[in-house]
Structures are given as C-alpha cells and as structure tokens.
Length: 513
Image 1: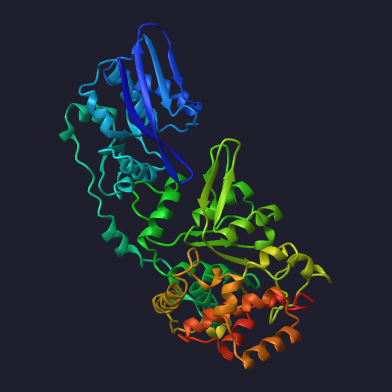
Image 2: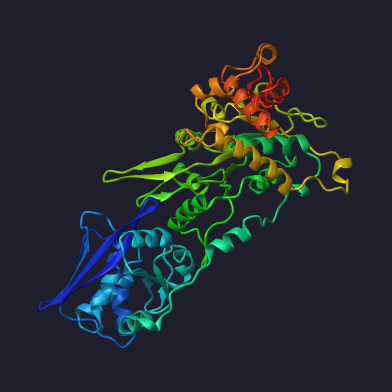
C-alpha cells in the first residue's frame, strides 16, 4: 500500500515542503531514497524501536521510502515522525490515512516513542500555511514557536501514541492558542541592565546614543576596567523596540540555528551577540556542510559586540567587510547558494596598546616605541573605514564612583533615539533598503548633509590641523546629520560638526605616537 505524509526541510531561513512517499509491498528490504543524509538513514533503528515499543509491528516485507523532490539534500532527525506515520499507514495499522494529506508532521523519535524538539519550527509553520495545509504537528517544546503563525492549526505532541490517536480521532488534541502579540509588547522594555547604573562616563553615553540614533558602528578605545564592555551591553536598552516584522525575521534565524529555548515565543528584544575572539570565520559569518547562520546573522536587527578587537584573527575580521556593506551574507556551495540576513550594528572595544595604558591619565604605558602603531595595525583600514565613531574611554574617578546620584535611565535616552529614527524613516521613505543615516549613499550624502560656509571652514580647519584622513570626511558628515536629528534640527549646524569631529580619534595623524 502507498501512503504519503508531508514534512519540511529548512534551507537558509526558509523551508521547503517535502513529500514522504512510503510503499509497503511484497519482497524484502528497507530502502530510503531521495538524497537523505546519514542522520535520516539512521532513523530506521529509532523508528523500528519506537513502533515496536508501543505495541505496533514493523513490516518485515519490502519498504520503499522516497523523499521528494529527490534532487534536494535532506538532513536532520526531524523526519523520524513523518516516516514512522507513513510506515504505519502503508502497513494498514493506522486508521483514516486520508487525514495525512492535511498535515505537515515533524519530530525526532526516541526509542520509547517520545518526541524530541526540532530546529526551524517557525519557518516550517510559515511554509505549511503558505502551501495551504490545514495544520502542523510538532513536538510540544516547539508549539509556542510554531503557534505564532495565524490561520494554521498547530498541535503539540510529546509521544508517538498521541499522533496515532489523533489520526483516529482529531478531537483528541487541541490546537495551540498562543497570544504572542500581547506577550511581545509586554516584554519589549524589560531589561536586566540600564544606563542609570553607569557612574560617570557621560561622554561615552552620548556617543552610544548617537550610534543608536543613526545606526552607526562604533569602537570604544580605553584601558582595562574603564567600562567598555559594561557600556556596550547596555546599548540594546536604548535602541528602538523591534517591530513585529523585525521580530519575526530575528526569531526565524534563531529558530533555524536551534538557539531558541524550549517553549520560546517571538523574540521581543534586539539580540546582543558577543563572540569570543577565538571564533572561526565560518562560525562568525555562517556556513558548514549544512549551511547554518553565523554570529553576524544571529545579531540581525541587533548588536554584534567584538570585545578586544585586535585579538581576533585577521581572516575572521576581513570576512565581515562585505556583509557589513550589503546587510546580508551569501553562503555558496556547489549545489546551492543561500542568503542569511545580517543587518547589525557593530560595536567593538579594544585597548589602545598591548599593556593597555597608552594615553591613560594616571598610569604610564610600558610598551616599547612603535608597539602602539603595530597593535592598531592588527585592525585593517578597510574595516575601520566602516566604523563611524571612534570613542576614547577613560577610567572613572573615585568621586564619580562614590556618587550616590543615579544617572539618566535608558528609557529617557531611548525616547530621544526613537524620535531621531522617526525623522530618518520619513527622510528615507522613498529609498528602499535605507533606514538610517549610517546607510545613506554618497549621492544622498551630498543632498542630505549640506553644510553652511562656517561649517565648511570648521571642517577644513579640522582636516588640516588634525591631519584627518579622507575617509573621515564622509563619516563626520553622517554622524553630524544624526546629531542634528537628535537636536530636531533640519540643518547641520557648526556645533553638530564640532561634536562629530571629536569622534574620529584613530584617523588623527600621530594619535598612536
């Protein structure tokens, strides 16, 4: 007897429906075809044990299983459940096999029939709705994730017996009722950290506010213990809240990577990813035999924080350059090319020299001559070219540390950031793909960042006196436009330019001695 069940395979951040055809006929053998990987081939032993341990029989005649379309590579253990249901249906142990065509079924089987969680439940649910299926059956641990998709009945199951019983009587299971929207809005502004906890460092807070308002990349340069990491971790608390569309994109990526915790719902806060400096280039940008999203994609719509930037391998940093420009990363393989989104803010931190005390107000640098420049050269010019703000962080004095007064909280700063972003959304509404000042093109720069004669004179004097490089010119104009937006000023004024100029430390000739 021939029976068809339906599953789904995840490629990139999208899913493709897979038809699993099971035919049980006279003969001998178990044949699994349609480009399955080793994990799917091993499913025979798991399925055999699960079926027997639940009082059913595994057919001892010829079983042919085809996973169509046959020219697409299938991987993962989530196909255990649809294959098992196909075998039970084809061997006439399952009632009402006509119902199988209405549902996408996914789940990994244990030897006793328990069903384990899977990766990519959200894109699978979106694809099931798109293809017109009535419902989706997934492990109970994934039901909240898949239940975000409306107009689709999502059932959570924990054991093979529950699925078999469901196809006898559909009323044996109740579809998930997940109120993700209310939960999403209720948890958006709940953070464990806040800028009000930070003592002093007003100039650094201001720089991070500008970075958040314009979507600018920034680098924090300062001695150990000055608070670079602490400040960077608080950046997501002042970024604009995720929109529902952004939250869905972010959740899909984390779902595919298997980074969502059990019973997780829609991601409500902007991601903050902080990989260790020993990370490989594949782990950072994504890839592998079965391409998976890397750290830059997991930071999509959020912040990628690289602590101790010069300690990262040069090859790792260089592979980031193209994704930073294009806001996506393309993983190319012989048979397929996959795109992962990578629209993130880069925040980096570094010591100014190996000992960490170059330019320190109290401690003396012990590095030999030329070491500071050599240390900074570990970070390439093209990468620094994509970083708009260079912020020098100095240690906090004892009087500031012992001050009992709390600083401005994240909510107040975030309100100003949101207002500045609203100005930019109106400005760029006719330009698809541009959402913030950091993304404006050279042509837009000329139109949007016009400055007065006094501003031109100041910029010329700064370029000459500080020996700023040519690449600093565009960055200063973009940052000054963001500062003007924060001031709700339609024009870039001299004071906006003056503030932007001070955020180009590493471009100054002689800064590194």
